Structure formats: C-alpha cells, structure tokens
Image 1: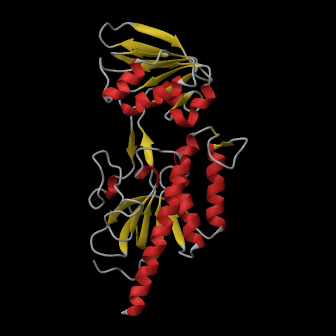
Image 2 (image 1 turned 45 degrees about the horizontal axis):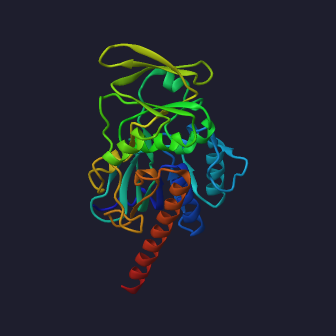
Image 3 (image 1 turned 60 degrees about the vertical axis):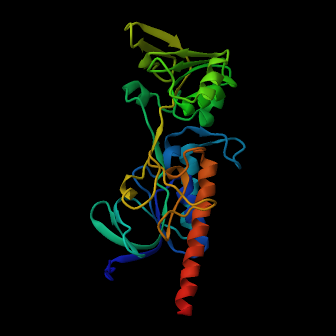
Length: 321
C-alpha cells in the first residue's frame, strides 16, 4: 500500500482511553512521540461507570471512577497528548507502516506506531433493573466492588471459572453469597466447582435465572425464576454481581491481529508486541486474567516503552542505510 501523502501522519496513535490508554499516552508524550489518542465509544473506559475506587494506589481516601479518569486525561494532555473524541472504525494493517485507519467511518489517517487500548466490555443480562441500579449495588467486578458489601448478603450470576472465583472471593467478605446458575450444572473446572460447593456461606441456585433486581435507589433484593418449575423466589440482598464474561473490543482488528477464541489480543511474552510490527496492545483488550485498573496502567506503560524502542530502532536503521 502506497501511503497518501495528503493524509495526516501520526507518529504514535493510541486507540481507546481508560487507565491503559492514558498511561500509554503519558509515557509516549514524555518520550516526545507526539501521541494522538482517539478516546473511543466510552471515553475513560469502564471506570467511568464505576462509583468509588479504593484499590488504586495513591488515593488513601478513595476516588470516584469518573474523577480518576479525568485526572488521568488531564495529565496526558498536560504532557502533550492530543486527545480527540472519536472512534477508529476500520483499519488496514496489510503491508508495512505507516498503517491506514478510518476515523468515524469518514476520515482517513496514517500511523507509524499504534497502541491498542480498546478495553473489554462486561456482558450484561439485559434487564432494565440491571441498568437502572448499575453502580448502586449492581457490578460486574467483585474484586473491584466487593469490599463495599462487607458483612452483607449478595448474589452473583454465572457458571464459569470467573463466576466461581468471584463467588469464592465474595464469600470471604460477605455474610452470604447466592450463586445463580442458569443450567443444572457449572461450566467451571472441577477444582473451582469443589471450592464453591465446599464453602459454607455460598448457596448455589441451579436451573435459575434472574427475573428482576429489586430496589429503587439501590439493590434491595433479587427475584429469581426456576427454569424447570417456573417458581419465582425473592431473596433480600444488598449487592448483585454479574459474572457471565467480558467481550474485548477488538472486532475491527481480527483480520490482522492474532487473538484467542474470545477475541483477546495475544501479545508476545514479556512485551506488548502483537504479531504485526509496530502495533502494540495493552489493558483489557489483551488481559483476560487480572482486568484491574492498576494492571491496565502497567501494560499501558509497557506499550509506550515498546513503541518508543521500536521507533528508535527504526530511526537508527534508517540513518545507517
């Protein structure tokens, strides 16, 4: 592909915001890489729909998720990042850099290096009360928000390893954990099943699905329906966790970037490098294990350092030719 010299050429393009993207931007800006960031469909990432964050170092009193992301953004901008509202809607990673990308299905740009930090979106049940009470007792991350329900009764939906791990985690904090499983069996590994079934304060409700989350201003209970008998049961709870999986926001990269079966980008060991030269990935777009703000920020740092080293080596190679 012959680059169009009339197009804007970006030295370091960051696709997506959130802790990973903003951290990458901070490091890239300090390395004088003139980073340009397109924030994506959810500027600030998943933390913008989170209430209080208490597990990120440096905030002893905690901080609201949206405020935290605004501070990340201000720091990136102060150091020289060009933060733009918009989405990368198509890419062409065939051939060599600079790569061509489409912004908002209309504008074409070129990028010498690309950092993918598009994150992942939690899968939800899709019921109105879930959306209404999101952040007011409804959460998709037990590790993030479980602390707020210490000593209380909660419910968690899911049947895989993640759901079992989060139920086990919650059982150490909460008085009672109801696990709502749609089928009559788990999808989790045997080891995780045994851990859940042998935890006294976890009660598994098989063949059950959520009919409604109860409460006006906050979660006060859940009404579940038995899939076999049709019987409905209301259970008083204060927290409701959804653990039915995450979907990485990586669809547009699939023709070019190597991913796992779910869509998480596979990076080379001990780096943020993808299978394509000059393209790096960080945050929840490539992390299916930890999915925490602090680990996302760490991989954002890695991606910027990898991109800077790549550009530096390319520059030296050009000078020596």
